[in-house]
Image 1 (cartoon, one colour):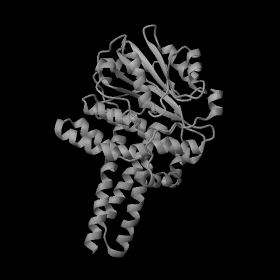
Image 2: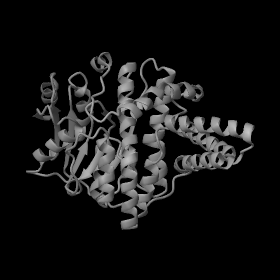
Image 3: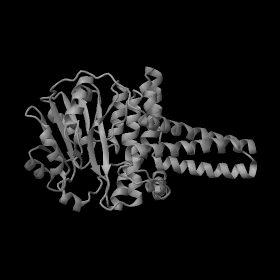
Image 4: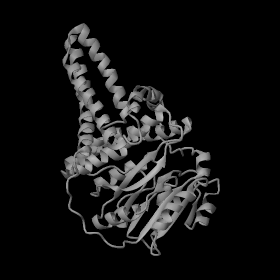
Length: 401
């Protein structure tokens, strides 16, 4: 019986070691001095079409368009797809100077369908590069040029740095959420780039060569369509490049219900993708023998940080009990090492990338944040979210903007 329990705990410890060591390697690579990389020759002026999918974004889309219009030349197009809108999104976008397409389909809902609709509109006169920007984001000056030129030069998808800003009155949970988002969207992609590896798409601030987009279908209701798209393109031979120099920002919802809805969609989608797509990536790696496929399969194996910590805590408690009662110490030793690696990964990420906006006390709120997420993961086991649901915006903030 003791041997069986020891084997079981050791197996769990070894399974947790995979995402832990991947997280550690990515975070460590992100903080080492940048290696010099060969610069690709840039196409000076690729024609660009910016697609902005929007569902009931009348309150804030004008500010998004205000950051985009100065980055669009006379040869380029800025197209808003007002998708199943029940507000004034279309008229606000037109008044701001964008070309507006209105789509109405109550059955086929979601960002993927909206993007597919926009691409069909562009097909009569296709651009060199298509850039996708969400309707609630702010795009830094020069970001569109950077990612579009890189996409045109490499003929690969390009992902900008997409981060969130803090609410006006951040709670401890929102501060930790912001740190976790920074680790996922900035630290780990920087680490992968440092290692010469591709990254996953994160949903906005994405640039695609027109010919590359023709290799995949965007028309789906996938709740994490960006992640699925990056995997489809990777298997088709088009790994995503991370461009840390191009900045796109969004806002972390102040409303707790909206924040919970947003995290549920992201994390349920992540877990569903992990379970379904890692075997697909491993099969593609065996068939194609491209290390990029294995690297992204391993990257995808890292669950949301709170869930990884939750798994580790549960395993650690079981290992401590086994060590005290049955003198089984191997799993405890391995889990202790994993705990140190997780802590080191989070700490060095905070020190390098978030210290200027999040105090050290943020790390002390991690246990509370993990407890806040427990119902989210229970819901995944009971009834996982499978349909796209728009996150409610902070109306007051949108109007202020």
